[in-house]
Amino acid sequence: MFTTVVTTQKLFGMFELDSANSIIYSRLEREVRGDEVPANDLRGYRLFEDASHFSNADELRRRVNYFRAEGGQADSFDFTCHYDDGDVPVRVLLARVGERSGDGSTKSILLHIRRRR
Image (cartoon, rainbow, N blue to C red; front, side, top):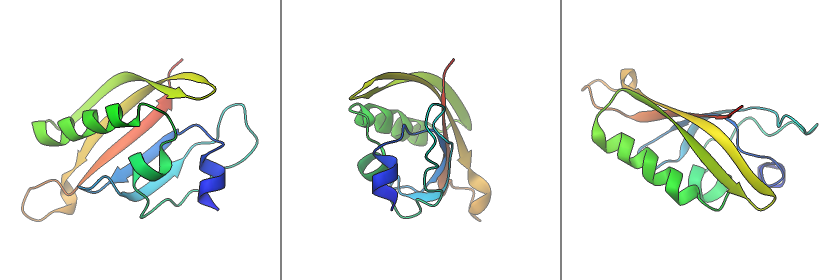
């Protein structure tokens, strides 16, 4: 089940989010030091409430919502996820997925979280 896997894994992967930050599409990457393969399909889960198990998920949600409101096509930034067992530096990539809409408005955001080296 999703919850048992994600709680033992760091959150790395690609997510397409609707306007409420619910996951439309997900492709999780295997944790580098773990052997457990995470669930691939997190559709319907709310990324920041259900799938993000780091203490500063609200900060990342604010950054995503700011990107959604500001109007740019793409953005990237460094972020540090604060997990119970230590901090994990990541690179966050954001892009608008406008081709899903007929009226030119953005229907979803693509969010990619990868470990920063």
